[in-house]
Length: 477
Image (cartoon, rainbow, N blue to C red; front, side, top):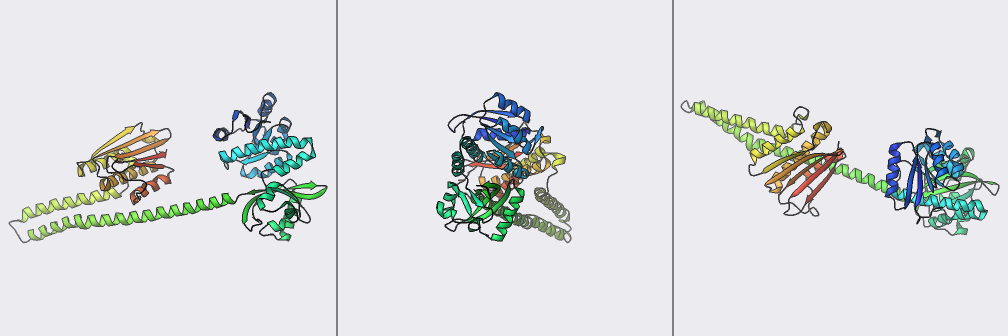
């Protein structure tokens, strides 16, 4: 049997190409030395590979074209007496996986619920379990060694009294008790809700099932009083001809705490987005109010004055009415400009690129000292969904607004390209830049990030004081 410092030969029995590809990628990401990875899509192919090639470990999908469920493992058993077997299951197959573990499989992994670290640990433990199982077949003493050296806490308790009969070193160590101290306790002493009647009923359920039962996540107490979350699996066994239950306990406290922290982060992130949206709305309303009051209102006020004067001054009437007409036209253009920045562009009608060019033309007219270049590379608008077009347009609009207000730039380069399955937008300027380590993101940058995240996009900002700023957004099509 291969040891950790020896290359490992692996066989993956999986008929789903996507799942096979993901598992191969995860295997290559581990720190294990892998001699080779073979694959089979049916049980027949798997048995052929095992008969003609040395294999150290098999990943077995329980749902195959020529076999299903526990039958897949049973039919493969004659070919894996010296090979570690790790089952690949779905959330609904864990009961079958537990049956296979009782029958000799080394471990199981739930598809989509493991990373390279867990995979590496599962492989190491599976190879170790198979090695111990070989010893177990040679003598009863080997069995006790396997039980005691299992890295997961395990124990056996009496089905009638609930008293502990055996406990491995991992259980003793993890719960903080001495060997004799632990064996003088019962299951009720560990459980936070250690109601003996309830525990007796649960044991009765395992007695009926016989082939093992997944208890789910329960709360246990350590000797030091710490409460931990434990993922439990119970198996009905005969211990010295007496009914008993074998227990496997996996401490998942860190995982649950991490999930709680991630959930809190998601809630905080959503709160930040909401606050940013509200702040942006208030800021936008303030800007519109200023434009209407300081600009449009003044123009219309002057026009009104000309009209009133023209009504009483016949000599100046024609000239005053002409000036009033010019001012009204100017006010109309100003209102159109404000409206244009607020109304969603008709991207379906005029397209993303033409919409971006319209923004550039407006800025070139307003800021003749600002050179703006649009660089298009391998762009086909048909590949970009309408929602993503609108998001890209708004990001360009927002960043150009940031540059005009804060960057003091003279040149801007907007590059839009399709790279693989993603659309990549970058907006670079030669302005004053800023220190990203100490700079507090304004509402504009927050809005850009929020828009990108809603469509699984990624935002990168490269900047330094005096070195301009480059905003890059990568968004899957």
